[in-house]
Amino acid sequence: MTEKDLDIRFLEAVEIASKMTQASLPQDVQLRLYAFYKQATFGTAKYSQSENFDLRNAFKTNAWIQISHLSIDEAKENYIEIINSLITK
View 1: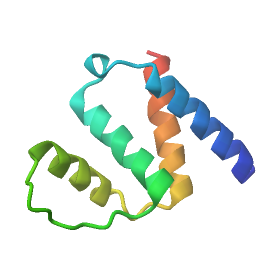
View 2 (view 1 turned 180 degrees about the vertical axis):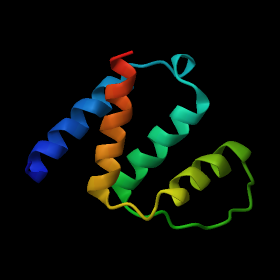
View 3 (view 1 turned 30 degrees about the vertical axis):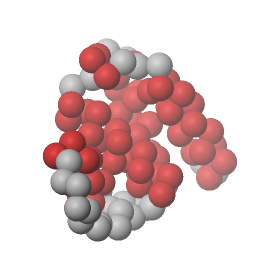
View 4 (view 1 turned 45 degrees about the vertical axis):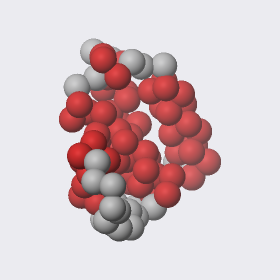
């Protein structure tokens, strides 16, 4: 499979995810999707503690840091897998 095929599949999965409601997804799934999306689009997380502590953002950053060992392509594959598992339920 070529990188272009992966990018197309990833963009299709992002499109599907954008049509899902947050209420329809458990919070742990939302966090994993967020982390894989950020890793796939921005690469490894760079942690910086801000003055404004926000628990929600702390959870999101933590989820991203936990998967920061993955390559961009691996993150895309994981994101696609989650979306595919959700639409086949």
